[in-house]
Each structure stands twice: as C-alpha cells, then as structure tokens.
View 1 (cartoon, rainbow over the protein chains, first blue to last red):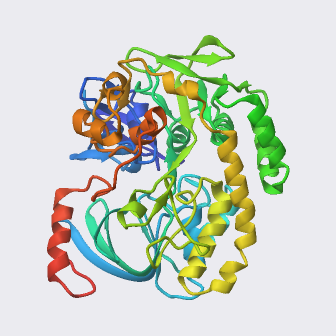
View 2: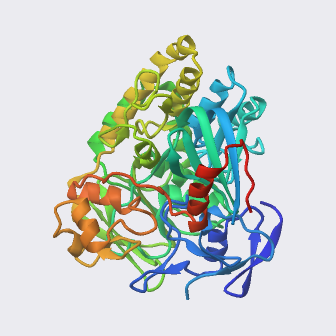
View 3: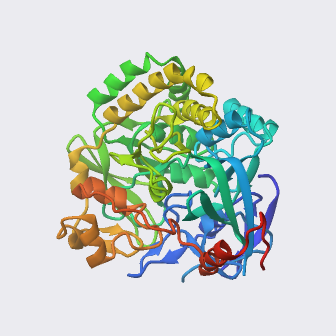
Length: 81
Length: 435
C-alpha cells in the first residue's frame, strides 16, 4: 500500500492508499456509511461483508458493501447524510 | 442484464481460507478441474487476509498460496455464492456477472464470523468487531496513534491486539469476559500443543505491557455521533476509558447458511460430517469452522481430508485422522475456556437495539418466545444481513434456535435472480453469454 490516489466521499476528495477498501475511505473522511431506519449513524462493524452496516452508493451502485469494494481512482462514494 | 456464464468442475470449493485452500490443493492431486469460489477480492479467508500474496508475511499463508497457484486451481475471487437453483448447481454473483457453477464433488469451507452481543451504545460508529477492526486495518485503515479498547472473549482478542499495536495503535486494555480459573486451565492445556505454545509465546511478546483483564466486559459505549469512550465492568466495579475504537468479539460462530440451504444436516449449530468430512448430502464435504471452531491448524487438516476424500484418495485421507483428533480436542477445550458468562445476557437496556438492520430494541424482543415469532412480529433478522448478526446474539440472549434457510442466502440483485431462472430452463450449452 505505497502509492496514494484520490476518491470522492460525498463530493470531498480523500487520499487513500492503493488497495484500500471504500469502507476505509469513508472512515478516513470522518463520515458514517448509512443512517439506520430510526436515524442513527452507522459505520463498519464486521469488516468482512456480513453485517451490511457499511453499505453506501459507490459509483452509482446503491447498497454496495463498502468493506468488500477496493477503491479505484476517481471513485465517487455517497453515504446517507 | 449482467453477463451470465456456466462453468463445470470436478471439485468445487466454496471458501478460499485455509480449509478451502488445503481442500483444493489436495483435490488437485487427482483431478484436473478444481476451483475455489470466494467473495473476497483475494485468497486467504479472514485469518490470512492480506497475507502471503507478496511473500512478506506469514510463511504458512504464502506457502499455501503458492501451492494453490502451482496446483493450477481456478480462482473465482470476488464472487459470492447466493443460490442453488437445482441440485449440483450453484449461482455466484460478481460485481457485473453471474456464474452458474456445477460440480462432481463440492467442498464447503465457508468459515466463521464473529459473534456480536448488544450493549448500550454498540451501534455507534467506531464500535467494531475485533476481527472486524483488524480486517479494516488490513484494508488500509490508518490506526497509528489511535486508542483501541478490545473486549469480548477468545484468543482472537490477543491476536488482534498484537496486530494493532504492531501498526502503531495504543491499546489501553483488553477485557476478557472469561474467568481467571478458566484461562489458567486453558494455559495448562496449551502445553499439550507445541505449535500453539509457540503461537502464544510469540503473542506474549507482542502484547507485553498491555493491560489484560479477565472477568471484564463492556457495559456501555458512549459518544454523540461517534464513539468517544467505553464503560467496562471488572471485578464488580465499573470504569470509563476514553478511546477511538472499541473492538468487540465474543468468539466465533460458524457460517452454516450455505450448507443448510443444500440440505446438509446440522448438529448443535454445526455441520455434521462423517470421518471423511462428508456431510449428510452425498458428494458434499465440509471442512474448517463450519464443522467446529478450531482455528487454522484444524481447518488445514480437515481441508486436506475433504479434498482427498472427494477425489477417492481415502487411504491418504485416513493417514491424517490422528492429527485431526488432536486438533479437535483443542477446539473442544477452546469452547470450554471461552464459554460466555450469563451476566452478558443482561447488558442491554430496554431501548438497546438488538437487530441493527431493522432497529429492533431489546424490549420488543423479550416479549417473544422464539425466533420465528420475533421475526414475524418485529422484523428482527429480516434485514439485509438476514440475521447473521442478531441471530447468534438472540441465540445467546434468549436461547432461540435459528430458522430454516431460504434462498437467496445473501441479498442478490433482482436481475441476477431473474437471469438464473431464465437460463436454467433454456440453454443446454456449457457456457452462455447473455448481456
């Protein structure tokens, strides 16, 4: 994980190490991933694609489990705000 | 529509962790077409995540990686098995495709996940699994200079603490719920397992100086929008500790959804297998954590036995039985040492959410007598994780037994489900390619 590149989380550029997952990018941006049905902010829990707490919109694809998706340059991530 | 293709194998292995890798390598001795399908981007499972691919980490992980490569095993990484449209056929979904996989023999090496238990504040961001936080750090999360409290039970807490500290985290304490007596007994038992002693000694050096507290567990996590501190109980007293992350894991639970979907009989929540790791469904084998939570050594031996037996090499398989017996004994001891104490059943307050997908609080669940009734009336376990988090929690909290499994075992895209039913009826060829 040497080189870095930029992805956008809710429009804000975040520099991530290559190989980082989208969940990591969201955490590095200081954002939560989703808002629960009663309005709680949620972030990654299991880190392995089981719990679905880290889901967000990645390049337009809704409900992506961000801990299972590796960042690519210029990716656009949108979380519940 | 997503790309649809078909592939046929002599032996198909579901899961690319130690058990799956060992099964694939062993099967490759006899048959040509062996594949591993795994939803993660790389081989290694959870325990070897991010290791071995560049040869710089665990020698065991990299040695198995290279054995898989040399054996010519087809790797289908990033593909999640979600459905069995008919016997002998599985469907796996990738980011933009669906594969229909068929096989002569199947090895299920689906691994385990962490058990999470609810307590006030556990839904705050930065309260994670113990293995969960390790996976995130392995996936690039900077942890240098962060304060991490570990809580829960089992040897994983120590391994994660060692890993995080090596990467610059500050670990103010590790809360282990089990008793000192049980831990001591477990320590004695380790003496019978030379490799385990080596592991624990290596760990001992890595975690030297970290405060390790038995009889201790989290009472509440605090924070406005994100975790700021945790209150823990130890020795009848409570103490609040500031931290950036609270990493909690209450041992492991086996991933048995796919075996159950295929009709494999379960016993006490684990997949029932015979001496050759064959499940109650013919030609379907199972190895590793779904059979018993025993760690990497047991998984590797069971994987080899399954791979050999699936390809008719029964004598070779038999030669590994003694080794397996030894590691299974260890698994049993592990279970006894880290069994959950009853105090953990009363951590929730009435408004503590137990089902995180559907936000169902403890107060609404305790009115029910079983999992099914709770599901129907509260939607507990009906969200995207399909009860993978709250199921094991309610099993411990209320002694509820899980339901039967229905397809798809993971949320799948509608077009992929539709594609599978269309394709299943129409195209007899080996590969298809509808767009």
